[in-house]
Amino acid sequence: MAINERGVSAASVGELLDDDLRIPHYQRPYVWTASIALRLVLDIRDAQQAAIAGGQAQTAPYVLGAVILHENDKHFDVVDGQQRLLTLRMLLRILDGEQPPSPKTMDSSSSVAEVWRMLQNTARPMHLAEQQALASFIRDKCHVIRVTTDDVDEAFRVFDSQNYRGRPLAPHDLLKAHHLREMRRESDALKAATVEEWESAGDETLDELFSLYLYRVAKWSKGESAPGFTIHDIHIFKGISSTGRLSPSSRYHAAAQSMIPLMSQWHNSVHPEDETTALRSRFQIDAPLLAGRPFFEMTAFMLEEIRALKARSFPVREGSEDSSKVVVTFGDKLTQSRYRKVTELYLAGMLYYINKFSDEDIDLASDHLFAWSFDIRLRYLRVVQASINNAGYGKDNVISPFVQIRNSSDERVVRTFTSTRKQYNDGHEPELFALLNGTAT
Image (cartoon, rainbow, N blue to C red):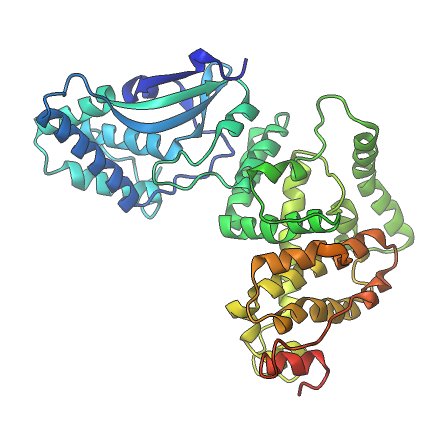
């Protein structure tokens, strides 16, 4: 059915909360702070007072924005509007005189507990009649634009930055939703554990993994521009679904994914192979993966790969003399913002290299990719994102190292990566210039 004319309507908060609303697994936890929730309450009270003063208390609704719902069997999953609805439900319970949840069921330091205390403190000075009037105004005169569809993909296509002073779902949130739906045959316990592990990584870390590394490698390795990871790019990571018809290419990759664990067991019995190499074989960045649980396993593995690369390439020196020459030369400078973009470019290249060739000649690869990446910092007075993207995909027919890695079966391809080793001017980045020319001490 998707969205039809009847699927978009105005509804009062009371009508909406009377429905069987549920928060699906893919939604982030409640994250509003007390200050954000208080702003919502104050806006509602201002609207209530303005309506009374204007003599429109019985006729003028106050619109709180849109709520997007996915009709799922006989209940409704909240796709957008979760933070607002949970805040309003808490406020109404307090105005109706309900006691706070038991400490056994609510962490006193959680966002829910913080907001609950703030709402209690806001309602406490009101007389009973004021509390009842505010509750009535919220239920009857506060309205939302209700968008309902029975097609969850349509719900996410409609989804945009509707959240009331909140943060919309990021592309990686939508990927989480997609792959959790592909786990429909898995147990609730497994899905809950999967969500818990995903959330424990943190939004910033997940955004970095997909935006700075996986998305860029997937695009640059094909010689395509990667200006920025958005919700329009999530198809890159949707994987091969177990439902529906499969093309010959999808069948090939699905069969390969299924056989890799068995092949690894057989190979290890003859040629011992570490688990990391086996996982790199299973999770090739430039090849499709199976949708559902394998996506989350891939994400966890790639997070560990990036962590290990950062620790290897830019270790904490702690005064020892056996650290890498990069850290000895630069100290903490490579973590400064002026080197951030070229460092991300270098790490993306290293991630792709070890994913393709494992640890073969990793020191050689590191040297050449470092020189190629940081050469940009040497050549430009100011490094902007466009400079990084142009180098990544090979603008103006310049062959990108990412394309070279994709098209090569020999790890020695890194020897062909070139750098100009020319300064923007004579006084620009002297330490980096010395390092790249082999004269750093």
